[in-house]
Length: 290
Image 1: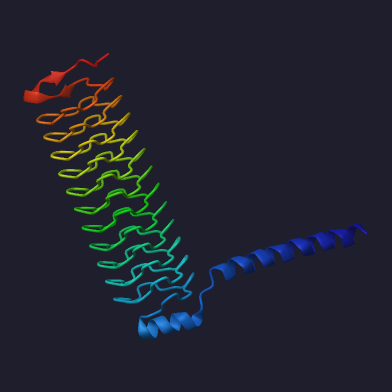
Image 2: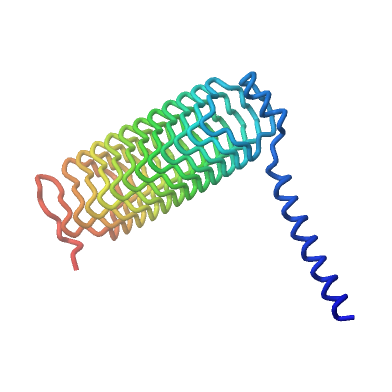
């Protein structure tokens, strides 16, 4: 009796495991006909390419609008000027992929791996890049207006003159990233990590940098008019000639920061730590030192 019972239990466990495996497989199974069509025509509107191996494939100018590329392998793929509007690239592997000029408007890229990918002048307006890996990616001149990069890894990425207006970068890691001349007007950078980030000439008007870490960041000539820097850490940051008119710097940590030539008209610096802060004419402010 006991042996029969054990046999039944084992059978149920095996059956359940097979069902789960089949379910997962079915969830990411691409349509072979769609892959064949893509290779032949470079046009596959709303195709099912989930889990497909498209590694190093030449898809220059391909039409992949609204295609399902969930978990697809696109390492090193050539997607220059490809149309990926509304495409689902959730957890796709796009390492070293070339996406210069590609249109990824409203695309879903949550959890996608885009390390070392090239996205110069690409359009990612409204795209969802939550938890995406963009380490060392080239996003020069890329349009990321209204994009979501919550908790994204953007360390050492190049975002020179990128358009990030109204972008959501809450908790994003932008350590040592290049954002020279970038437009971050009204961007949400709460709790973002910007240690060592180059924000020279960046436009941060109305940006929310509450609790952001900007230790050693370069904000020379940056525009921070009306920006919210409450509780932000700006230890050792370079704010030479920065425009902080009307900015909120309450409880901000400015220890060792350089504010030579900075404009602070109407700025709120209540309880800000100004220990060893370099201000006008090279004078060191020690008013906030213990």
